[in-house]
Image (cartoon, rainbow, N blue to C red; front, side, top):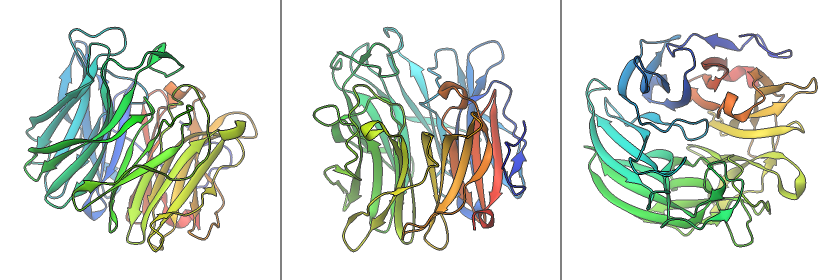
Length: 393
């Protein structure tokens, strides 16, 4: 692995315990600057295994295996995850094929819970799409008082079989956004619908804030407009979904390019990709508490973005936003830059070269660990890097 031309010396590659050909990676930040990296790798004797490691100080600890199996659904966009929930409590999920599935569909979520930092696990939830052609996945998490919330997508009925380049086959099913609530012991408390018709294979994002729990997702509105919407959980009720911004991206089929969401004391920020009117853009917007809406978006990219946004909030209320961009020389790069609430953007920093194929790079991840940004991406296997926040000044 080498750093692309123009990358700064502050980018430090981190050796990970992930095996070769690992994929489906995820990053999650915990208290005290600890970061959790999870991934799926080939298991001995066949099948797959979900593993995780903690980043403490300057290196990744030894990997811990959560589960393994032969009937897992593993792909480049719908990633399993391990998430910290405070203390030694963790939640983790992966995706499993149903026995009577049809084609690439027919898979669902298996959620497990640990109270001893991953030494033991117990299953607390399953979800699958209705019908043999349905599926459930694209999970996001947020801690709440007394437990945690989990957002996910699930097919409605057998789906509306419309020809589309949905990324999961030749037809795009009808998908709903749902949210499941769990208490501090991992017990299911509630499972409810947030939006009845959303994009079928774009990742979701979720974050708690002083203004409630936010979930961001790519909506599917009448006329096949696929812009980013959000809903907010307050007083134990989800609001009606609203657009973050009316981009007007008309596309018949899911672009498999979901939003990123993070929050600080000043409120959340969201970053996303759009190709409305045929122009590719990577945008970011900050929450306006006084007006209870997201402000007008700020353009982040350098002219040729592929998308797959990441976002992390910084101490001063600004945000670090990452994305994949085609460089002037031709190859793709994973980049990051600082953006302020008033719209000023910093010089982009190249974190690493990125493979050209979307299934090769996966969906790069970004979290903050105190005064560092931690990145994860795929290039033949799972790679990570650390960048000081000061490098974005």
